[in-house]
Length: 374
Image (tube, rainbow, N blue to C red; front, top):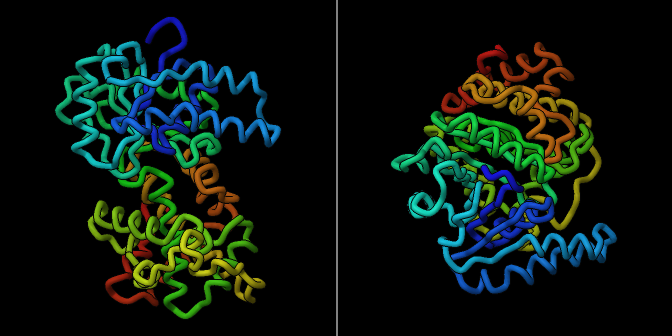
């Protein structure tokens, strides 16, 4: 890394890539950015200016800060202009072949000391690094949308990523104002993996005849800003279904990642949530909490706690890291290990045992307690 402020490269200038570029530019880092699509390059500076101007209008940014941020941004026409970069982050299409091809091209341009980071949310980092001349400098920096507002960045090295590169990527990204949580190169990293029971157990309750209003109202009463079904409505049922299917496939179809028919039916009907005008609850909001709200919340949190323990048992992260990631990535009021402290281990294990006893045979392993919890 150079003695001056590290130069950051961003490849991909869609909403995510441009937002990541703004994060580093606003922190004073020189940013070189490009996109294979010419219109994305040509409009990038104006789109960033629009985003910054909206913050000025809201009273959250000065004109001087906007101008400073824009002054740190260079739009490149070709990859050859990325030679000065110390850290390059790709935010291109989620295809392994595209990411590998890009990194192979960058290896002929960058110094061997430069770091190659992927913003992938679904492709194993080790597969992206495989076959490169310097796989030890490849890691994931997974930002959350919108990256300018979301504090969390998941840092996922693969088995042979060099410690020095992990440390540099962390230091640079922390200087850009982010909370960086290291996690294993496992499907879904922390947040997308550990969030599955939040949605999945709500869909299980729905399939058992509970109303969407009761389920979400129970979680609101437990301190959550949004219930799981309202969160699906916000994200989009199609997006949630794709993420669940992806994790189910990556985790050998384990019943903890079961794709519930209610979610598939919602997508088939075009009831995607806010973007389609109708969802599980949208355009309505949850009604009053049901009498058994505490039991509903315990059931959902017990499965969250269990999934977090399964991830922890696989190594590469910590209980505190998982809690922080879940709170920052999903605005949860508490992380799974904090929820365990709240409810107590006996209550959680009793809940899982009852769910397992009641589940159909094919679904019983969904509730098997993880190592470290049982």
